[in-house]
Image (cartoon, rainbow, N blue to C red; front, side, top):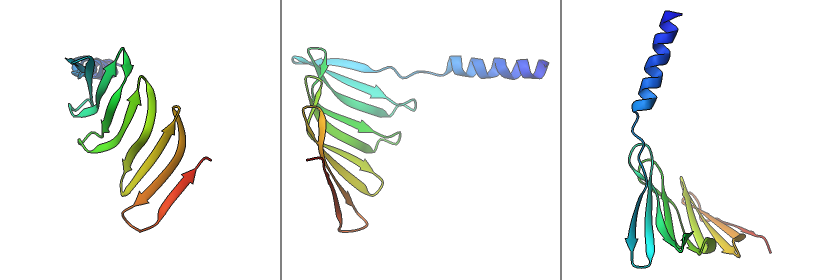
Length: 119
């Protein structure tokens, strides 16, 4: 029982001492640039806010710093083409009125294009 209590104390103290990486915000003109981080300090997401809403280009990264997503917001609404990278695949997602209109996926392993169109 004593060993179990000792292990619990060590686990709790390790969690309590773990440093949380807080997001940063900096004013750039009439927009605010927000940067969010993974626990290891690498950038997780970066983009802009305008009038308190997601606005402009946003990018997402994995824990190693590799870009995994990129797209545009217009006052909190996803617009236009968004790109998502996963392994050997690139997916292009087209948004209309914050809704997926179509998805096209490419693979580096073949010349085949997979197209999903909701229309």
